[in-house]
Length: 121
Image (tube, rainbow, N blue to C red):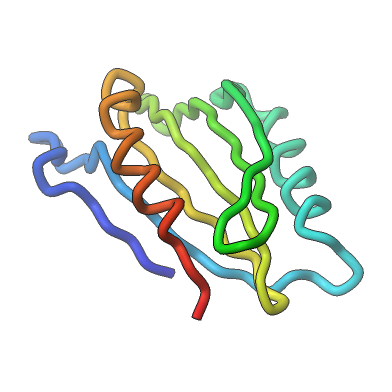
């Protein structure tokens, strides 16, 4: 897992407003990327603090990827997040870009740069 935060977005409480997390997990045997993606968001939909904004399919690093933009409230803090899921070489990669809902549109260009330049080596 790798995480990057915008130091200018740290609030006085210590909460980091803008961050990017990239994690990889093995693709479970007998499942597809779409299976794992669907299962994950089906369980999130049951949580009261989760609100789906949009979903789409795109291409990242030459493979099909799934994007989920949502708002989530954790411990009274609302974040808007864009999660992009792709699979390469038997691993699922999730690029999670998040910030406050008010800053999301302004940060989207930076999130695009990170997401669309992502490559598995």
